[in-house]
Length: 156
Image (cartoon, rainbow, N blue to C red; front, side, top):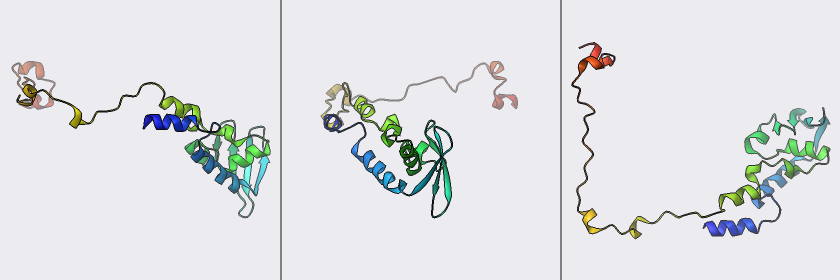
């Protein structure tokens, strides 16, 4: 399974996985028709024309008042509209956790699989041994004077 994932990651086109790209394209379609007013280089007021409901987008901090941008790590429709206003690619605002290089790191190196318990051979002498919990003196108190701070001992 790990090898399959590594192969799938290596076959990816671009740096954004297909399932993430699909979400971004949906947001891109929804971003059309939004009114974008730049407030500064990175700060924008994005308004939905029919409802006049506005959102504040900060591309530098990767935030939007709709909270999708910071919660999902993906640019929301408002952030995509703001990025388009500055002729910036919206894919550059995708969080690093969603990028190909991060996913490739998760399957790099040796990953040992957990063996099936049925496949592990246990020696016969181990199977016949009775195992009990260890004996302990945890609850035996001989020196009551040293336990004066114990709440149960104060009232005896």
